[in-house]
Length: 376
Image (cartoon, rainbow, N blue to C red):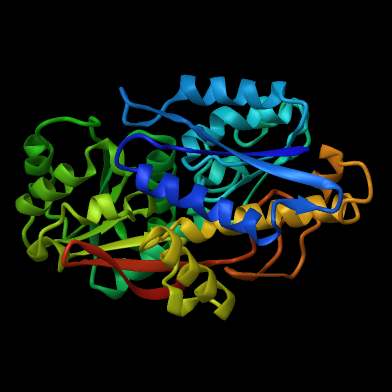
């Protein structure tokens, strides 16, 4: 038997997306009936969140990683969902050569030392010196360029950025600042907000005094994003608001009023069904039949697992050879011109997908609605 682990948050507001990713992973395994030649493949879910934090937790993520590396049947790891959790799990898995494919961790520094990366990234995540992490979602370097493109097209000239201090939020804020300055879009300031505060009106008043005509919120949904968005919007009633991928969830959209929704756009590596190949529409239709309306990230759970399963099949000659983690890893990084539900892509030597399209989403009647796709 071979075991795949999928690590996602199953507590807090982002549990809807975490479960959607896990559901997508199960669908991918079901497509091959849980079998690759002589090998039966099992999929085990890990919750990297805790009820106390209501989002991913570093200690829980570390505990989960230790369990994964202690399992001799482990052949691969799907995760993590949040970039901060991936920053915790990658070094632990790397020491044991465990192939890791993240569906949704987009922080630039996980794979690159370029714009948006912090000092020491990405080398500090790979103690063996060998890359073991790849992702199927397009990085924040691209998301930042898309946000700048989108904001400039809508008349933004002075943008105020707020982030939640998470790896995803800080990385995106930094990436956006660099992309904006290069494109001539003024970033007035970047402010980190206190997560899960009960009142953000002081921050909102400070923002209002700057004369910003646009606001970018770089955050994960469980950080108090709904209340923050409402109070910022009230303080700058004429400004446009933009949010990053961590807020492209039904639990966030459900808290947004129609009047606020008309001013808000969200970017996500996920596209609407209409923008994907026919194979994706089939998968999403099947998902809806089994689980209900899919969260945007569900398709990434399906593809991350499909890529891993394809690599296992290639590494074992469809189950006829011994399954070795190093061989599976080699197959993942040898991915070229893969025809998938996300479109045709390759995996770079750094572990990034070659896809560069982001979706723009809006909120309508408390629901996420796909607006359009933009290429970065």
